[in-house]
Length: 401
Image (cartoon, rainbow, N blue to C red):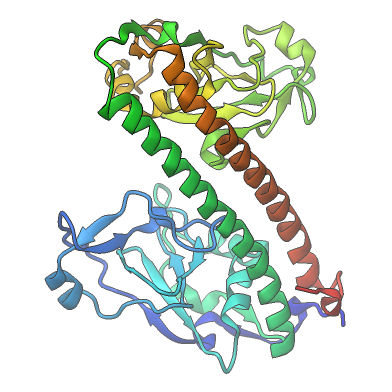
């Protein structure tokens, strides 16, 4: 059964909803603890559910009296400001409130399947329309009145369920892998805190970052030379790549450089296991090279000494990020120089203690890397097949979940 959903009947988005949770546009008063409040930064199109980045909290009084309504499990969060159109599903159970600049869309089950609606809202067709409709040169804004301009296709409910469940099943597996990786990350980070911070040995020597590894900068080959760049060549990473790719491990950025580009720049190839650290705009993106890589000048990466190892350097940088930021300088934007990076104060643990930590982390890192690679394959497959399902290029009856 091939079915192009874009050729079927369409309804304005508000007509397929039973309710829109739209709280007042003013900034909600926060508290030190209490109910969780998530903001627009917690909603990303690559995540099935909200993340808990930089959350705030509300008092019981604010929770009870400030809001007109709260989202329910199965609602779809829709970001209206900043990068409008980012959407994700509200989990079951729900343990948060939503801040201003986003709404929760409640699908009318008699008209549309909520998982199908999520997939449609994330489609290129709808995302492009939202981008073109939004107003504001500095901070784009999608007004509530614009919702009526979004035309949602309404195919047969059976087709909706096939497409919605297809999209959701892939996304749910990706989300599960992310949860496993987050748990592994917390375990390793807690062990670093326990061994090297809470129970630090006073006998450990004091030193600098250079005692932990070799600090290496990067370079950008001339952008005017097309022959310096390639789709498949030598991996070349920029801070933007780490802003888009939130993975712990990275093998390639958006574009590679050629041997000629490497030769005619001061970029250098760094080995697998190098800890990449963005040194400006912003300071503190951290990832691990999953193979040989080069970077642009926005990095001061660390090639760990053999006796220190990648896991220790990775968590040392994460723990000492505030210190490194404090050593940055610059009037337009802050940057940590190579000289300053090499001079970052460090403690030098004994070899046996570092080995104990690395022995724990090595299988953890390998598991995380495998799950991240699986997620990349799942995301690519989901995002490649979904448009074909929606356009009728692939028979929906061939889909088995």
